[in-house]
Image (cartoon, rainbow, N blue to C red; front, side):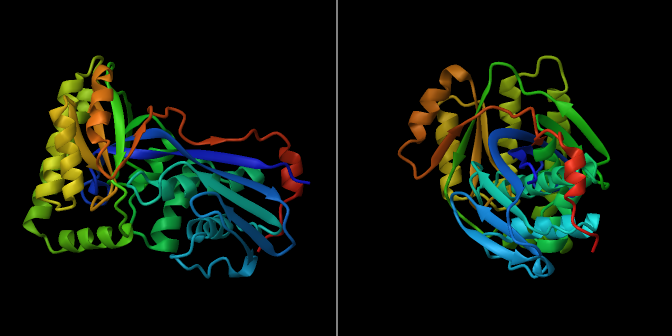
Length: 349
């Protein structure tokens, strides 16, 4: 029996540059210590692929291999199924008799790239089963194609590279793959608090509205892009330095939030209240992360003052995560037994 192969990938936050990956290119991402994991083993009957999910969905389904492309974007398995379909199409390999099980601690629909973490993990785990027919870049690109082409979510490159690379990264997405990838570092003596407003929205619809505004050259959208691009450049310079000042990074966070609220129009009353309370309790800065119109706020704080900020937010309808930057990015199980994995490959399509 084929040895179980696993791959896990962290979620990510956007420090600056929401939606710039599909407009002008630059953004700064940080991987976080909340992860999705995919495990693949050979347990199902031939010509079928088993799919299973952990919380919050906790479901199981058996799909005929030839029906993988017939995907319903609204079902719980949509991203797993789509990732398997893209991997199959990219490599020409059959996935007969495999089971793909996914679990995740990244809250779904919260602006933390939970779907990107899942898709990268699924593609990477399947890739490991078949002894890595794709290199790391191709794994990330297959994950990106899953959302852009197979599911049509409108997601940009930054989610997939930000999750898979780990750490803090500057990405220039004016090209595919990104024209520039630069590793940065967070300031010492700082802590990130992630505040989930628990406000769900359909990410695909929010992104579609933004794309229409960009195509129409709407003045607020153009101002957002121009001014946020400048803030990303300043943040990149700051975090590339030997001793970045946390207070200045916080000021840049808050400046980004003002543009997200006043120009991109994707803040909410609860996000605004979370930001204001955090700042009033001494946070260096705070902003929403991701698509907006709900989702999460990231708060940059002095570690000595973080407890006070958390206390100030406790009576709001939010969930609070105190987590570290994840420097590992995509992690896959050992490729031991590659010869056996090769023998276990299905026939070419």
